Image 1 (spheres, rainbow, N blue to C red):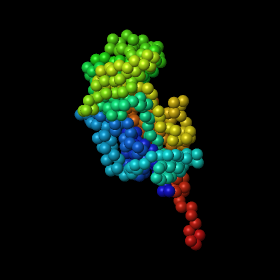
Image 2 (cartoon, rainbow, N blue to C red):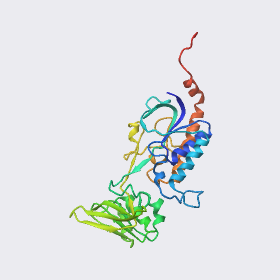
Image 3 (cartoon, rainbow, N blue to C red):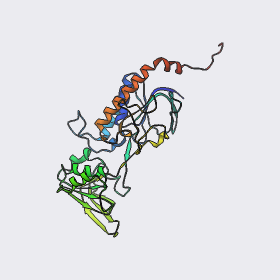
Image 4 (tube, rainbow, N blue to C red):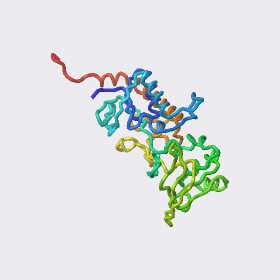
Length: 325
């Protein structure tokens, strides 16, 4: 097992920002990319709200630019998946992947969270081209369109209200006969003329054209069993997110939903382990906010390592007795 100064778990925008800063500090970070380089942003068709890009840029292209930049400064990308960690003994920490085990003086967790999916035909096929999990990210592309929002909680209703700024109409599809959102949010939605409702219903299929754009959804009434087809230009799904925290085996403190708890310096409850991005941010979930959080976590890790330089050098010394000792 090779001893590393910094291991970054995850390769979303927060991970790339942390890698950039720690690499420029000559810490030679290792970034364990996971299943998808770039995380959720790599699946986004077009990004228009990231500073510095006046023209739309695809999520894939933005991730490639991130990769080129961090590798230029010495980040080593490992296309592998973390299977378990051991933070119990303090630094150096043990990070196990499918193929290897790493020892790390400091760890930055940027493993993210995944939006819950409907799990219906057409959902994966049209993701980023009519199926979205982020109104703030993609609402602009549905100006003057008719769209549906799936869900009945606060997030679904908040996003539905936001999407009325762009869409011609927003139909909320909910599997129950009443919303679970707060009373104030429900009142705002009720008085919005662009919002309508389809109660006691679920989507069984998302249909689209060969060019990858959505055309309709197949809706099933869970009470009567009636099947109908509803034309739509877009499907926005807001049924929750699942943070990818189970891999840490309960060693990192989390809230009731599984999001890692950090302080203002992005320090976790484990000294020397930091977290940034959607693994700890259940509110904003934007490329820009994740980059800022990853920057802060990276700088905190740099400072933490600098303050313990002498101690860590002693730990890095080879304890094996040499011939003649």
